[in-house]
View 1 (cartoon, rainbow, N blue to C red):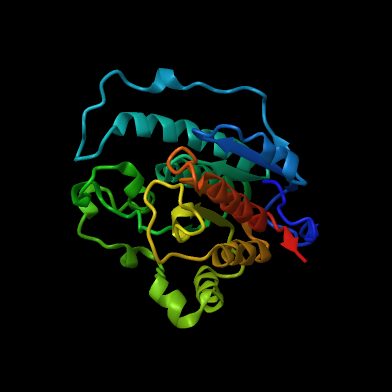
View 2: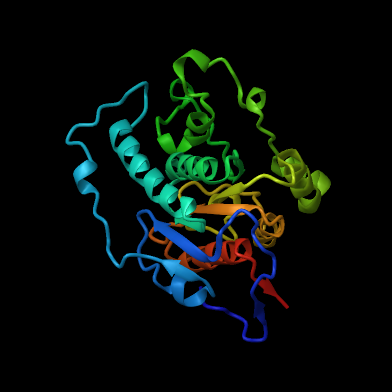
Length: 284
C-alpha cells in the first residue's frame, strides 16, 4: 500500500463512524492472504492481530461430495463458520472489521458475523452494499458451475433455501444497479440512490469484489469482466460509504496476484486504494 505520488498529501478522516465504539481500531481478518503485513504499516490505525497464523486444515473434510450441485460444501461451510466467529468477535468489541479474501464465498461468514454482532451490541440490523461484476445470487440448482462463490447473496438472504427457489432477489428488499445505470446517471447519482434505499441511520457492511473494476485497473482477479468500473469510480463508492459515518465492516475479495503476473501490482494497488478510501483517507 505504498503511496506512489509523493506530491499527494494523505489526510486521515475527520468523520466519526457513529456505530463504532473503537473507531480507530481495525480488526483485520485475512483469509487465504499472504504478505499482508504492509497493511498495518501503511494505515494510521491500530490494527489488532494475535501474531499467529491459524491453520484450519483440520476442518477440511477428507471427503466432500457435491450437495445440491455445490462443490466442496462441507469445506466452505466449516471455513465460513470459523470466519463468522472471528468477525463477530471484532465487531462486537466495537472495532471496524476489515476482511481480506479469498473469494466472495467468505461473505457468508463475514456478513453473518457482522450482523450478529451489531444486533447484539446495538439492537440494529445492518445493510449490505455489494459491489461486484457478478450478482453472486445463484441458487445451488440454478448455478452452472456449482461454485459457492457465486452463491453468497442467495445464502445470506435465504433465497438458497430449497422451499424458496422460486423467489427472486428483488422481492427480498434488494436494490440493484448495473453499469447501464452508471453510464446513464453517473456514479454519483447511483451511489445517492443506493444510500437513499438504505437510509441514513443504518450500519453498513461494504463487500467489494475487485472484479467490479475494469481489468484495466484490476487484471489479477479470478473472473475479470470488461466494461467495469474505473478505479476512481470504485474509490468514490468507498469514499461515499465512509462519509455516511455508518460503515462498520468491509470485505475486499478476489485480489489474486498469482493469476496475472504482469498486472499483479496494479491489482494490489487498486485494492489498497479501495481500502484506504473506505477508511477515510483523502488525497489533496
